[in-house]
Image (cartoon, rainbow, N blue to C red):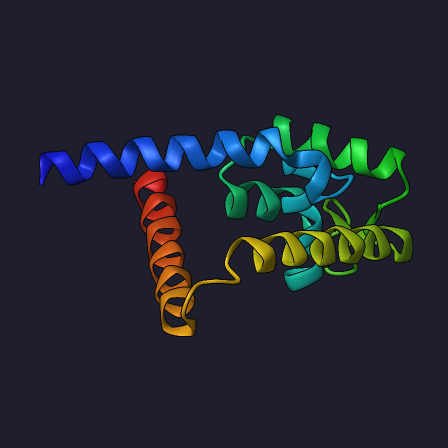
Length: 142
């Protein structure tokens, strides 16, 4: 098992490095922008606290990253009608457009990389990556 854990740890680290090295091919958003806009696309509008919670960020980091997206007009803030002390964050039309362009570029790259894989292998990778991320998230919150 230790050999497998060592291999998994290395392969995940290498994957992160390869994705970072190929970022220009994956679109114009950096990792934090991509993740926040994706979260807002799926679950928005939501508050900074929820963004921080979902992405395991501290509030100040999430706030800084959202401010950066707001400067680019990719998100907008407005007061929560139920609690005026809270601002909700919503993806804008231009934010959605850039996110969809980047998603398309990423899907194309992954399609090229996985083109010789069997469909069941792709589905297994999907299932295991979801499980690994869920377990990491749970572990990080405990």
